[in-house]
Image (cartoon, rainbow, N blue to C red; front, side, top):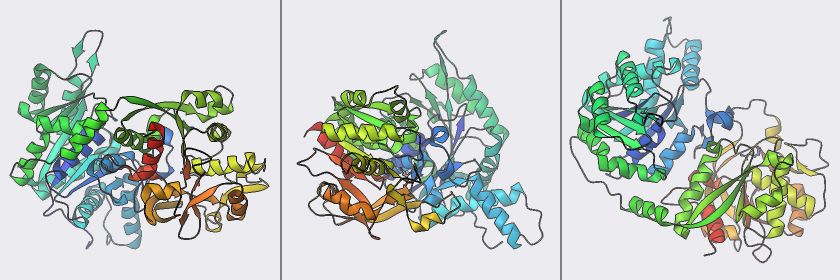
Length: 542
Ligand code: GLN
């Protein structure tokens, strides 16, 4: 068992959840990561997802929210996106650990005979693999501290091996090198006006039943908690009151780190793990939050896609818009336009056009809602309001142009109509051979060569940029001459000569830009993505 690596020198914060999922563990993790890194520590953040999928790539965004794409081509949980945005650095696909990955490795090793005749069991073999993966991230990145968020809620059957593994890590890494934070919801009952702490208490008992005593509790609540509720929770958590923190509802998620800093969460963690208490440098973050909260001029952005009923499906795009807007003094208002409704005549593309100052044509897959998106693209192109197309949004902008400007009425992407006589968007030959769906798209960061003199160039002012991808289909190069003759400008190319971005010249349209890559995945509050800056600036008219 040479591959077994035990936590030796690392320092770890483990974040568990109670009462409900989606209670804000991800943002707590991201906030703490920022607070520690702004004290000068090298911080890593890991998300554990106890589901059996190997990664989030094959999951429907309706159930799970957006699939986030890392620089190294991982298709991960959306929390990795929060971590990157708060930490301001790229994380690896290895920072998202799932049950699927763990069992994949353990079973593969068993088949190779690596276990030398042993009975392979959850304890120790599965738990060892969990610890090995956590430790590997910490060691490879030379992290001073690694924050590990365990997805789901204590008491979930599938989360048990992970909780057991981190319980063991406390013993192995040492009490002084580990810190457990439990994040749980305290509901408010509007009928009686009561703040209920019982669910938090029960989740604390559940945590202790499996051998974990938290060092701090972060209570999520609607309103700020009063001293009585804090005291009750502290008592049941067997903690001093100062170790109970309150993350109440706020409009701006980027304020959360400041709220937790005021309450001293990072100070407590730092003094346990590093034996000192230093001051963070949060000045740029505070400045950004100030801008964000003072921007008041509204811009309305139509968000055109087919998963609009679950807003988390487009989380990184929403966040990219939100954190770019303050720099231009505007506050975005999202006008969600379900493209299936447009197709079915329940919503008019004209209404979408009238109700918004600009539109984002969102990424996507498959047939449903496609004609609705194309109709909206036509309106915004002809009507001269800013339009940003992302991935599928770019492909459909090409289809729309081929149909309505080139006059190729039946032009389509072969993803939707494999028999179209004008496949302006088509699969690459190497994608045609693929029969496994998981992890086989064109994924992760790839170089994009920008064309001088274009809008895209003016946004980056660089010849070569690295942007992230997640797609199978491409602009069909045999239609390129016709498209360009008809006015489409290709403003970005891949190294293999594939189309990475198209636009219309400024004299034809104030802002019409669509990218095959996903600029949203690299956009951060302190360094917004140039493509979003261009779009928002054109909306703000500054
Ligand atoms: N469905 C398209 C493709 O696979 C676009 C994917 C996307 O928008 N992420 O190429």
